[in-house]
Amino acid sequence: MTSLPQVAPRVAKLTALSIGVALLATACGGSSTPTSTESASANAAGIACPAPSADAGAGTSAATNTGQVPASTTTTDTPLKIGSLLPTTGSLAFLGPPEIAGVNLGIKEINAAGGVLGKPVEVIHRDSGDTKTDIATQSTTALLGQGVGAIIGAASSGVSKTVINQITGAGVIQFSPANTSPDFTDWDDKGLYWRTAPSDVLQGKVLGNYMATCGAQTVGMIVLNDAYGTGLAKNVKSAFEAAGGQVVAEELFNEGDSQFSSQVDKVIAAKPDAIALITFDQAKSIVPLMTGKGIKPTQLFLVDGNMSDYSKDFEAGTLKGAQGTIPGTFAKEDFKKKLLAIDPALKDYSYAGESYDAANLIALASEAAKSTKGVDIAKQLKAVSESGEKCSDFPTCVTLLREGKDIDYDGQSGPVTFSDAGDPTEAYVGIYEFQDDNTYKASKEEFGKL
Image (cartoon, rainbow, N blue to C red):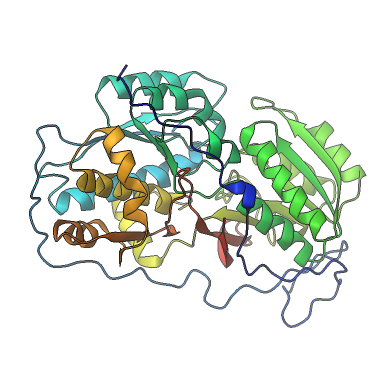
């Protein structure tokens, strides 16, 4: 174990939460007849959501630096090594490809610009599995044994809880692109845990308010009983009830369960206007049970843990009109093209931007620290995310750093400004709608501050 300096535990910053989201106006009454500003589809429960934004997902990324990147004035004998602990197996395996592609794209661009401190960055990928296995612990041990200074992952909050002490206790940065549990905000992580995904306080606020905006007065929930599921459900419930609604059923299940009929039957018996599915890939089993018992897809609201391409899983139209939320801004078209060049088989882009930004931020903080050691890099992560000259890619940002300028990195996931706790203090949450082929499309996005 690396001996660490004594650093006081970072305190929670969410106690004074102030969501600066221009949230959709709450419409608790609802109407079964959509107006011109509402979705064309409505159901018997009175669900009629606002129409998608005309420019949803149509933006383009900021221009990149095409000039010569100056050489680093400081070089290192120990190249920066970054590990990834992302899912290629288990219930979140569908999130692995976009996250890994995001990391690989970031590393490719970093090395094309000359690397960090005069040396190419090395990336080592390992599977995180899920909480049913011990794969994450084994992968973490292997990565630490190879001398990584930072590990990007895990995707699952539950998995991260099993390895966070192992990683940070070794003096290595853990940087998750997808952990959303509020529990990490005040974790005693010695200043070494960071994330580009916002706490579920924000996603829960957006989803709870959005269901109310769609006219739902009552909501039922089926919830994965882990740090992610129960934490997100708590915030969805709080926001929905604050908007005047009522949660009439909340059924839990455990990771590894394969039968969900009991939970589905109890939620349907409560006759909710809308149903929130806070799950991972268990949605593949739950959705057919719901629709088979008469629940309309327009009553279903999914979350980042199960927003996926279901075109090969369900009959056409099964999810048409269902909606869901994913933290982060929409993946822009030029960014998607770059990701597809890395992995042509990509179907989803969830957390690709957050993963790309994690790689860039680690590399930039390493340059700023003039060190490839995790404890040194961590001390510069907040500084490269705020109060400087705006930049959005490694070549541009590292050029500014090497010219002696302060930088403020804003990336593909949106603006990135860290709190002392390593959390983003501002972020987007995207709202998506499923199409007839059971793939989803950008609908609108909400910006919020924590």
